Image (cartoon, rainbow, N blue to C red; front, side, top):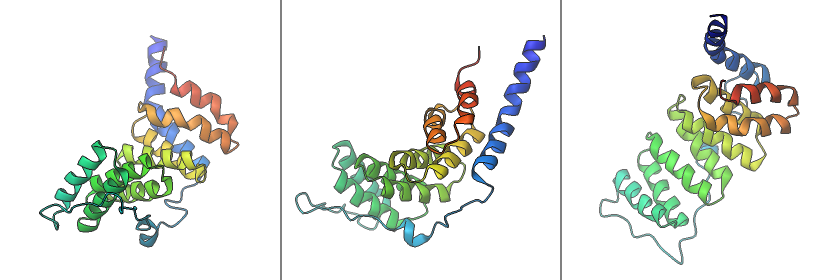
Length: 195
């Protein structure tokens, strides 16, 4: 009976532990680097000279551009895909799915800073979306430039859903690069499945 009570206590206290760890490791400021609109909208323009994009029939419809982008995405034609998702975002900047898809296209094009900016915009539109947090953290981790922010986004995702595997997979590497190795054994314990 004692073991089951201990496990129950541990599972109930895990989100509180993660939130406290987030605040201890990264501080309590919501956005330390002051994300600005001009920074979010700064993207590389894809080179479309060799394969230009034919606009959809409804060229003012963001969903038509998104459908066209998805067609290019399925063919792995990333510059065209990026161009079309950018058009969708311009026509309807309030739809997080367009921003997330744009970030994914940039990610597959290995343009991580642009991917990060698109994922940040999607995150602004839905701050509780775990996938966005994980994507921002992954972009930060891939670039190795924003490790403190990657840590913050991974911990925020885990505070919402501690069973989500993606952030756990990248957390140890980020902690190591931030010289916070004292937390690694605890994270490894928390990440391992219960016995």
